[in-house]
Length: 163
Image: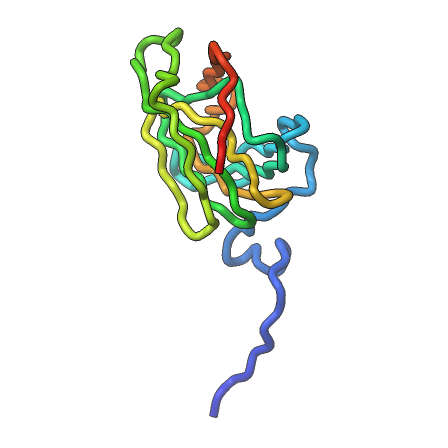
């Protein structure tokens, strides 16, 4: 004898007794610009000072003229859909809020959607630039990071990425 159960698609209501589904939020984005929509802290991590956020990046030119970093937290990017180019520069002095990235050390990586990454504190980066029309990510970092630990620096020159 066995009990038969019917498989069904996830819905927030159906899954609520088991946990939280992370997907495209229905609420208005916390930040919305031409190249991305970002929803801050879409799910808590119980008993932790971390939160899960959702990032939807939109296709744009493969170039940038600013970088950001967070000095109080590591940052995790888990791809959900799409392929992207992800530019980085090594961390600079964490205690110097006016520090700038070393432009000579900027590298860009292709994120094919099969690997997640954990960035060191202070790693300079640009939000992923999709190779597909859009790319989506779960982002995990310390609660309040988008409001209290976002340092964005204009670069002295525009960086163009080639494939």
